[in-house]
Amino acid sequence: MKTFHTFGESVLKETRIHLTDSFRCPRGSSLVVRPIQQNLRSRYVSHSTRQRVTCLKSEASTSESESLKTTATPIKPRLTVPQVAFPSTRDAAQVNPVVTSITAADSPRDLEPDGFFGDNNPLEFWGAVPKRYRVVLICTLAFIICNMDKISMSVAIIPMAKEYGWDPSLSGMVQSSFFAGYMLGQLPGGLLAARFGGARVLPVGVFLWSLATAVVPLAANSLPLLFFCRFLVGLGEGISPTAVLNLITTWVPKTERSRALAIAFGGLNVGTVLGLTAAPLLIKEIGWQPVFYSFGVIGLVWCLGASQLAVNPEKDAEAIAIAGKPEAVVEIKKIPWRNILSQPSVLALGFTHFVKNWGHYTLLSWLPTYFAQKLDLDLTHAAALALLPPVASIFFSGCASTLADKLISSGVPTTTVRKGATAVSFLGPATFFSLAGFVDLPTPLLVGSVTVGLGLASFCVAGLYSNHQDISPKYSSILLGMTNTLGTIPGLVGVTLTGYILSATDDFELALFAPAIGMYLLGAAVYTKWGSADPLDFDKPIPKLKDI
Image (tube, rainbow, N blue to C red; front, side):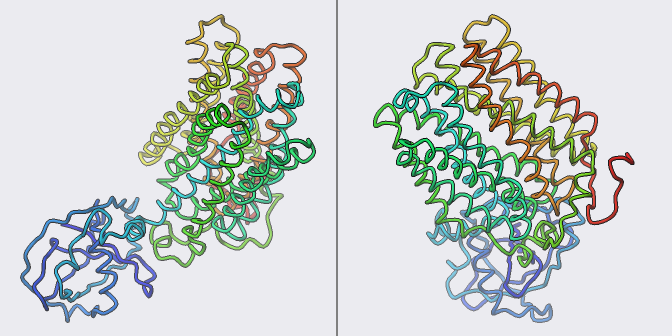
């Protein structure tokens, strides 16, 4: 038996109708359609029939008394696409199924899927995918491009430093200029996403960072212009995480958000892999300039498809039926800063974000240089080794998010899940970086320790990055903007400081690993003590820090 979903323009709730089978109807006959009131967890939808039902529904009577019975010949549909059911019976209770009578079309082909895409139209196939999946996919693509543009300088800085005669300290300043813009974009990005919605803010960020990336080669002869271009890249990327979080909080039910966040933010790791793969090849064959040209153009192409992001989820039937009335798009006239900043869980979350990014940004920026100098490798082989940590992060983040959602669904307190994931993301890297930096390991084990350490750090998608919407779905984008502002300071200060210490000591263990290990241990202690996923209503009087 098949379940068909329609979203008519005049229907404000999802309508679920049920056919006893898929039919090939004689000319002029009718199909009798009855509602499902109990079992709403059917797993498949016939795409082509769904499109026909939606089309014919407007012409059909919705009166139960007008339904007709008919004899039909069953056919076997050639195409099904996955359909994820409501996460709970509470959500299912919101559905208002109707009884519908549908007149069959003149040709039986109208009720039979045609080809892989259904009527040979890929756009119809794309339209059959639930909107929340489309939103997550588009956000993931944006983050892939985001880290491709971010990582491009980490690779290109090696030939650029040789060409322009930059020492490690100046190279660190060039890379840190990105984080200055990234830091300044966080809080404004959160405010803009809360006021106008992530669907309007994200394309602006992608366009800004892509255009600035494309003009980097033109500005490279002037350090002030180069700093400014990288600043704009950081500014565009800085407003994007809050926009993505706003979209996911708006469109994805709570029981699916850890996985949705893992998929979207996992795009950062995929972007790192693609950037570290493509950039060395381009540099080797035609120079470092095409790296920025090509990566920038890819982002501009993404902007052409950004119209697929729904800009009015509060009026969309699917968003209301699946996630309820979106809290994240409620107009915010006055931000309760005092209530927000007085909460221990918010302050602990901000410090945790700072700690997490210290290890991430310093390693991300200096890892190709570390492998090139420490292991005496050329650029291509050093970048190839630098691919391993983001690949490991993709694997570990998928495991972490799936496990977290299952634990929460089974009744484990959300705070316990968030603290456990955060502890793994801090204590794991601290352990493996200690081995890599201060134990005399052979090369395979050295590379393996760095890889596993950074891979375990990706457990933060089920801890840190999921915690903002736990505390307040309404203000989640603003919370992320606040904490990510603090989290950007390591990129601005830590990357530069690593360069200065490296210039003075020529010791990667002291410059790169020791500060990260100390930060991880301190962050684990702070979040274990004060971190929490308990929801807070910042619009009402709540206990202040001094009262806790």
